[in-house]
Length: 92
Image (cartoon, rainbow, N blue to C red; front, side):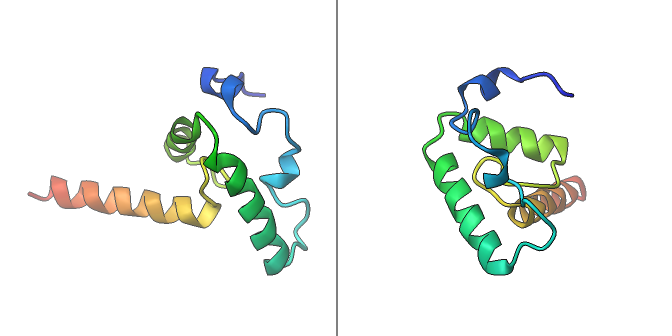
């Protein structure tokens, strides 16, 4: 188990059920997923460490759950955009 990072101690989600941020089963419907992610993002929206959480998830390559107000797919897009930008800058 990973140790707690300092920003995690101040996170709004710290004492909430993790099922809000991760699917409880593989059989989660698209509607259930949307509702769960919307609720999780609402928690993230008012979190004082949202930026740190998102930065950590992107740096760690976190593949599952809502982190820093972003879903798995949203983080994949962000990570792809960051890689693409680095490649364009490096090509100059």
